[in-house]
Image (cartoon, rainbow, N blue to C red; front, side):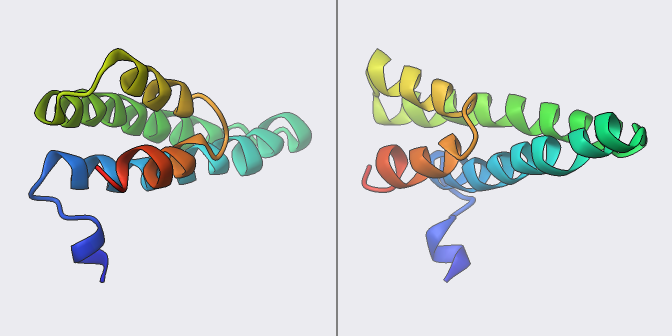
Length: 102
């Protein structure tokens, strides 16, 4: 099922997969490693997760551009996809509402 849902052979499939992975990394960054850093004084996990999330965010933005160019999306869809990456749980919403039925 996962291969049919997130086909890595298409730009849209890669974007949908990155939507989930980037969203999970965002939640882990803010829900786990930030409290460790600022609440318990353990900064090391935040460095690793912060770097990983940054790489995934850049990948998401690149995949958004790639899928949008292939499907000729308008500015509104690009903007919603980008803004969704800045909001917790936003990429999960974007994967379902913006990218699923394309």
